[in-house]
Length: 382
Ligand code: GDP
Ligand code: MN
Image (cartoon, rainbow, N blue to C red; front, side):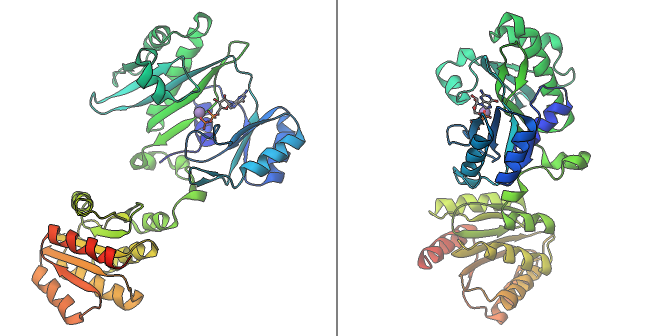
């Protein structure tokens, strides 16, 4: 789960990292009121789950009420790489002497957290990593020990932090690690981590990804994220306990079990198709779950054809067939369906489908064949 900048900053603040106080607002009037209350200069910041807001015109300094109103008006509703700005964060503008970079992420190959630090912050960190990798310090942390002040001092020193702020940078890294561990984050990033003219270390931006599977340990974090911009179908799927991920193609895909769904996506792609979603109905799904899953797939208007790839184990193919028949009765879909039923009760399942004689439903016996058929069906329906 990705957090908006201001939500990340609020977490940072709770763990002792210096951040500016501010206010999240959704209207121009509230933005101006917040700016007046905070006092000028303020910075008006677009809250969207995408980087590079500054370059896109989504971060502006305002010296007075007039400018605050002007920037809030321009930034609200702005489209930043496909993300529409619905929330602004207004904070007291900081004076910047230097911009550093700091982040902590999970290094899967080392099976350890990885701390990254650079004095070349503010800019695109990928560019620093590529062109001047020696300026990006990386160190793994022993998860049983945690990030000690000693290691943090070593990272800040090797990274070339200015002498008089090495201690402050190390404290910031330790706090950032505390956020990472205690909030069950998989990413905590600060770009830029600024040094102010009076040599204070402060997080001017925040990028935080929380592990959704650990949210039960943090009920207070459950409402974070960008719910105003979340895909309504994804929200509905979440409520129904179905794993659904929206993709940008035109073939709706449903399977049972994440592994099967992922390979189905691959095979469809191999035949030149573009999946519209990833939908895992899970093991043991009954007719009702299947019907709801089909509803979710059809709610996406881009879907030109649907592939049901079921390998019956705990899931029974006759239940899936009943769910499909129910979905056709309820929704009367016009897009073509390709259905492959294999495994537990597949004969019974195919019989149910045959008897129902659903319009636009083709049966397939193999996964390859099913993929080929659905790609052709989507093209025919384009
Ligand atoms: P991003 O472009 O999405 O990464 O958004 P940031 O929050 O990192 O802001 C982009 C840039 O705006 C920063 O690198 C700063 O140079 C500038 N900026 C943001 N906040 C302030 C501020 O309080 N004061 C000043 N002077 N500049 C700021
Ligand atoms: Mn940034």
